[in-house]
Image (cartoon, rainbow, N blue to C red; front, side, top):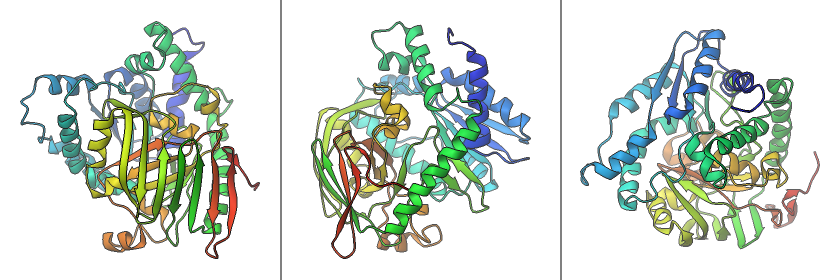
Length: 415
């Protein structure tokens, strides 16, 4: 790497993940899922940092995305409903024991673009069904969990196709270090202050208790209803034992859950969505009574169709998030093709599962009570970006009045 002090920056990145992202406690175990062999340098640094901070045991599940491609190219066509259940059993055992959970992604956003979309969808539904117990725990913040996405060669060349592979990877690493604030003298101190500001914004929105948000701009005219007792969160979660953590690094959002039956109008994505090894581009969705009733996409429409047909909950929303347009990620001026980064450049929505912690008392109530309150349940939780510098957002009050929340993509009120 030509990046100056790359090894030191990688070490700081790993320490940030362990100490701030996971807030790993003395003596706590850590379970890591690594989706590409190319992320090995970061995995090793994270493991080293975890042990230095007193972890008793760090376990790593190594996955190689190329094996997924090989499977789709060569496996029997009737075998894609198979799944190694030991993966679910092992991860679930760790979570129930109280181990922290870390996912290190970095997969090629178009790994499966030439494969049969129906088999891609079947393989994903099979995986999602098996991993649903884990998703349920994470939606309740049962333990500290975090997802990070370090650059990999295949991903970097998709973002910067005109560069050499080495130059593309270095450019992407430089962007990741910038957005994660690794160049700050003390990234942990920076993120503590930054998250506190996001918490203030979230607290203010929670106190408003808008009945709905109205989004307009760039092909979007959408009303997203909000359930009674909704809670706006920031990037910081908290476990039942009161341990704070950051689910994503970086994070720029405040978010809550929509009411799954009260979404009306149309929304147009402003950035491509990488989903299951394919890109979905220039797509729009139309909602009525909380469900997608029409959709279109210039690229990846069949993938979008399969996403929406995952289950009934995939046709509704599980998250609405507000992000000012002029974030550091937006100012970089390119599309990452990874939701973890692109969602922090733009207002976004998530199709599928809602986070229980976004509803007052949501963690403790039954599935039926959560649904009755307006919470959505699904095998998926897929964020897509629809914000822009032209977007206005209005909050609807219970008395019918409205007030500005965002104007031209930026906050319309001061704290």
